[in-house]
Image 1 (cartoon, helix red, strand yellow):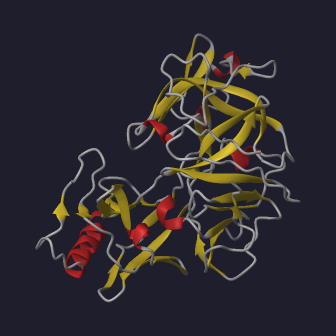
Image 2 (cartoon, rainbow, N blue to C red):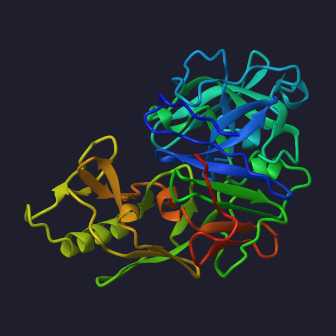
Image 3 (cartoon, rainbow, N blue to C red):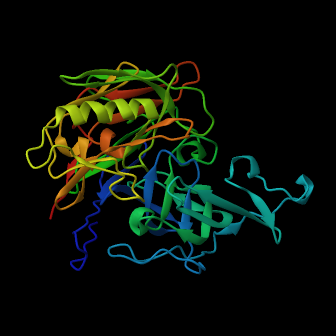
Length: 384
């Protein structure tokens, strides 16, 4: 199936892939986020694929504060006969069954509520619900799952949530962990650009066919955390991470966030590397206050940066991975300062093109990252 709206400023395509797999789904990039198609209540919804979220929510058709409709995504979730509100349990003192794992869970009018808040002040508030969910494009598994039905929703920028968020983090309410039987492996590949289909795979097909490197998973209930070792700037040297710096693989974030001292060192190296002819110094910032961009130039400069995670090396050789195109004539550094956040973050711009596999075996929990991009079977060209 292809969805195509000719009035959209950029043509967006969603391809249905047909694979003999335990379970797989397609991933497509729209602007700065990655979107997957999931059926909830036999309705096709396009949700942000987010490994930094452990809870799934969708926009209710009767929401009080709705995200704006935008082609090709215009519909919201409609209640079906399989839909159930999660009622507060009197035997639990009017608490909710999934209270421990639901963001900001409260009981109101005998119904369980949730409230999700993100770093950029986006979020959603609504009802905790259950419904028949089909998470895979090839429709191999349908089962009842817990999700949030969004009553008040806001996202910045507005397109960054679409019809909601598919939580692919860790934790009992994340989509991979709600599957029965619970898988011990799953993987994803973010497509390099809008002309490709990416995919996520759960079960036996979550294998990296070629060579890969391994990084240990740090024990955390809700997030996939590993150790950030260093960042290496070709020709300038390395920036070691402070001891035991943890980093979150977050496909819902565009940029990578670094511990403040690492970020400052990176900015210093890049300023030293880039020799502008039009000005003695780059455009400093924040260039735009709400985006917190701190190093901007009039063109993307060639430089190679390597992010070292465990034994894995993520090479950023493409200037468009190092410099994010903010406007037609301004390119800004695709890293940001972490501030007071407890973890560094690896955003989707720096992980796209690699295959990432999670081995959730309790005895050897680890992340496997392909050593080369365009791993066989990860990407499908989109037919126009």
